[in-house]
Length: 285
Image (cartoon, rainbow, N blue to C red; front, side, top):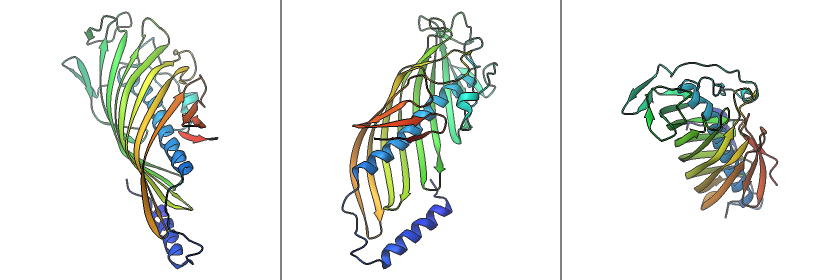
């Protein structure tokens, strides 16, 4: 991830100010505040979950929108989660079929580079080459996501994620459908604050469990129920005015969907609100 120039400038100013401050005013870090770590993990996990929900629609669009089953929503820009318009079509022309799976050319989605493949299955788990709404019960999607993003100058991130998700119930739950799967990530997230530059770097594993999505006539693409659990193992470090400190942290984050654009995000004893449309987390207590 490349920091934006304003962040570099702000960091330089912070460190310069610390270098000339009296030692009684600026104390070198001897530890990282646990609440700050929780807030950082909540923020990066919330963005990962919101991105995962958005990727459901990107997956479906690549696979031909499951004609007569579910719409394709464009979630590339904040706010479209509530107002996306359905479109239907065939398998994306960037995807080619071989050995039971469609492999797609790399694409830019939500500002990140995504390479995906998918396969259609009937109720007996047999592979099908062509989507048929009377036969296809599930679709397995596998994806690799790489790239970087920044928000409000003070947040920057490098992301390297893989996902293996299956949407099922295309016949048995019609018009709704259900997602399950696993993913992993190796992310680096930095935050510039008054206490210096905090960084989280490490690995996270996420599990998608029974996330039920509405049918094509629902008017939105908001999960009705289900959970996403992220278990993160990070090295948390902080660069302050007079030094650097780091510590190992493990956190478990649970997002529980409830049919609204603001599901609950739980991290330890702290409860927050995740905004699926803006990928932000607030209201932690």
